[in-house]
Structures are given as structure tokens and as C-alpha cells.
Image 1 (cartoon, rainbow, N blue to C red):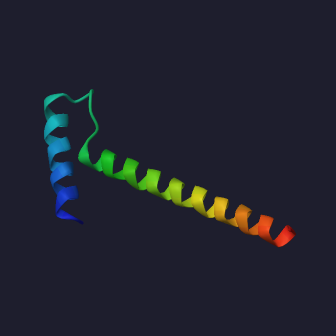
Image 2 (cartoon, rainbow, N blue to C red; image 1 turned 60 degrees about the vertical axis):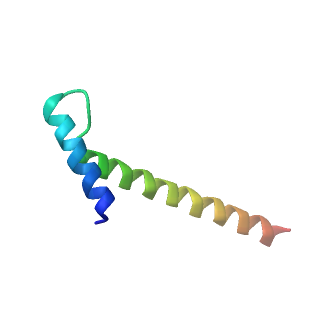
Length: 58
């Protein structure tokens, strides 16, 4: 993993230990970001497929 990602995860874990119910842990944040990126990628690929379909039908 990138050094910035590790630092962010450690920071979030420290904040979580002080206020357990009000924040995400580092692992939860990382999973949330990975899910967001994967759904964005799926959306972009669907958009590209629709765009190609429009070109073929014209």
C-alpha cells in the first residue's frame, strides 16, 4: 500500500479509539473507498458500452 494510505488508516484508527461510534476505522475507510472506486469503474464501463452501441446503430 501507499505510504499516504497507511498514514490515513493509522490516523483514522487513532481517532476511532478516542470516539468509537462517531468515525470509521482505517479498514472501514479503505473498504469504503475500494467499493466506491469499483462502482465508479462499472458505471464508466456501462456508459462506454452504451456510447459504442449508439455509434453502431447510427
